[in-house]
Length: 439
Image (cartoon, rainbow, N blue to C red; front, side):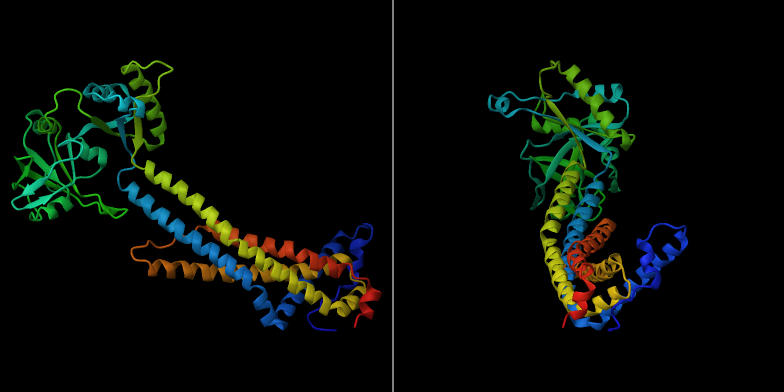
């Protein structure tokens, strides 16, 4: 008899007999059966090393593919989420919303400066509030420093902007309340605009031109880097009232309102309060839609994360098909193994091994092959994900969540059970006489 075939213990038949008070003996027999089956499975895998390696190859490829795909997509998603968090997780923006049919008729909804005061005094949970308006119109205006020019986002705002956005000057100062009241021609620059204008690192007290008018630079904001390849530092800020004067707008400027909440856990509640207040202020009837929208700074980040999760599941499902291919390979090899070991199975059953013992023996072998392939696949997928990330320029490091590892290993074990049950059942159902006669 070959060394990789387990022999049932003498008391194995007791498992099929009525309970005579020998529960302790039965438990010991069951444990002994399991250990013998485990030893037999390991011995069989080692005895046929090359065949076992080829059998688990499909599982290895499938698990490695799943881990690599999940790691790359999750790493990209986490990187983008961190970038959005750097924008200020507590910052929200209230802007006017106009339906397309109204916009085509020239009827545009607008927020008012009075809305800013109402939000500040009547909505609990808001910490800082500031109006913002585009300077130089929707297309912006060119900023010049001698022969050098730059274009970017030009905003008119108040001193509260830095508190709302959680960004502060690196050099100089920020806009003050008196700057807004007196409509002073002063500006604060983002770092990229400063570089484009060829200004020194600390350009305070220098002057730039906007729409033919001179403005004094009073500060430069700290750098915030890039997002989606676009700089977050290409902007210019000026006092709100100054921006209105530059635009030549007297009534109903197209303003938005930025504000921060005191408690991030109360964001949804604050949004509800704002909705109730704004509908009341704008005289909207119950059947009329909102003429405004409240957006958080991480709305796009959350949307991308949801999309990334969907993409991860779909891609993991597609590459996971190879796991099924690997399972079929396990079933084929196990069926061959049953055929090769028919005579040994007959000897074991003749010695008194119950059906459950034979079933367990072959099932454990199939599960071991699948689980071992899954573990190797996890290691290869982890290394492959980092290798691919290194080959792609500026690609973030992969992030492999624990649930992906557990899911891949668990699914591998399930594959072993599903595709190992048929060969194991065939082995367990062999009649001892027929098995002993098999040549």
